[in-house]
Amino acid sequence: MATVDADDLPLFAPSKKVYPQSVSGPYRRAKWVILVVCLGIYYLLPFLRWDRGPNLPNQAVLADIANNRFYFFFIEIWPQEVYYFTGLLIMAAFILFLMNAVAGRVWCGYLCPQTVWTDLFMAVERLFEGDRRERMRRDEAPWSFDKAWRKLAKHSVWLVIAWWTGGAWVLYFSDAPTLVKELATFTAPLSAYVWIAILTFTTYSLAGIMREQVCTFMCPWPRIQAALTDDDALNVTYRYDRGDPRVSVKQARRLREQGAPAGDCVDCNQCVAVCPTGIDIRDGAQMACIQCGLCIDACNTVMDKVGYPQGLIAYDTQQNVERRLAGEKPVYRTLRSRTAIYTALIVVVGGAMIYQLATRSTAGISVLHERTPLYVRLSDGGIRNSYTVRLLNKRPEARPFALTVSGPVGARIETVGVSATADVRPVVTVGPDSSREIRVLVTVPAGIPLEKSQPVTFTAADLFAGEVVRAEDHFIAP
Image (tube, rainbow, N blue to C red; front, side, top):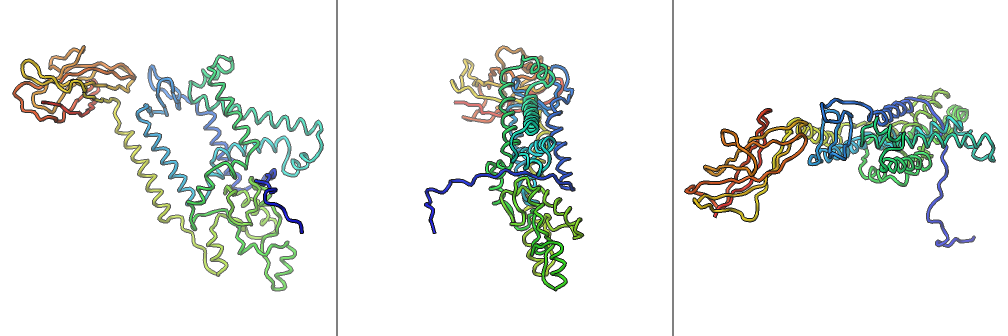
C-alpha cells in the first residue's frame, strides 16, 4: 500500500460550497421578523428626528465627531463621559454570556449582523436563482444567457444592498438628509465615499461570498463560547435516544412489528439541506453550528408528513438525551447560579449607568494648583495661592457662575479679568456648550494659623438654574 509523505499533505481542507434550502416554520419566521426589525432600525434610524432646541442637531441618533458629541434621543454624551460606552460594552458582554448560558450560540443564529445580512443575501439569491436544487443544477451547467443574467442580477442587487449598508453607516455621523443630498450631487466629503466603499466591499464579501466561512473560521466567538458553556445550556440537539437507528418509514414499521428497535429518523437529510453552514446536526455538537434552529423546522415538517411526533431535533442538552436513554425524566435548569450571576451583573451595571445618567450635572469644574510658585507671601503678611479653574457648561445657552472658596479661615477669592458681584463673589459667564478657563487667586490674611497643606474647596453656582458644582485642591503655606 502506497504511503503519503506528511510534507505532501495540504495545510487546509478546501471548503465546499453550501447550498442552503429554504424552509418554513416558527424558527424561520422568528428569523424573518428579527431581520426586518434589525435592518429597519439600522437603515431608517438616521432619518428619525428629535427636537433638542435651538443651535442643536435634531437627528435622534448622531455621532457628532466635529463637535465631540454623541446624541441618542434625549441623551447627550460628552468626550469625558466615554465611560458610558465602557458600561454599554460591559453590559453587552454579560448579555452575550447570559444568552450563551441559556441557549448556546443563539446570538449567532438570530441577532449577529453576519447572520442577518447573510439571510438577506440568500433571500435575494433564491429570488433570482431558485432554491437549493435549481442553484446546484445551474452552477453545474455550462454558461448560458439564462445563467448569466440571473448571476448578474443577483450580484447587482447584492452590491446595491452592500452600498446602502455603507451609506446608512455614514449617516450616523452627519445630518442624514443633508448627507444624502450631498452624496447624490457628489459634494459630500471624500471620507464619506471612502467609508461607503470600504463597507460596501466588506458587506458584499462577508455576506455574499464568505458566508458560513466567517462563522466557522473567522469569528472568535465559537471558540470563546465553547469555553463559557456548561452542561445545562440548551443547544440544538439531535435526540438520538429517539432517532436511532435511522431507517425509512416502511423499514421502521416492519422492524417494530418484529419487535426490533427502530428510530424515528428517516434519514432524509433535510436537516443538512437547510443548514446555513452545511453541517449534519446528527453528528453531535459542532463548532460550526450557529444554533439557528432551521434544522428543527425542517425535521418537524418531515415528522408531520410521516405522522411522527415533532421534536426529534430540538433545543435540549446532552445530559437530557442520556437521561431519557436511562429511563429518567429530562431536567431543564434555565435558572441556576450562572444565569443568576449574569443577570445580577447586568442589573448592577445597567442600574449604575441609569443612576449616573439621572443624577449627572450639566456643569463641571476642575481646579489645578499652579506649581511655580506654590505660594506667595504678601507685603502685609498674608499668603496667596494661584489656581487655574476650568468651568464647563453643557447647556445650549450661556450661563453665569458665581465662584466661592471655603476651607482656610478668612480665605478671599479673586479672579484675573473677571468682575465680582456686590457680595464679592466673582461671576464667570461660560458660553453655550463650551468651557472657560480662568486664573483664580486665593488669599488668607496674616495672623491666621495655617498648616503646610490643607484642603480648599471651590464652588461654582449657576445664578439662574441654581445648579452647584464643586472641586477640591490644597492650599499651600510656609
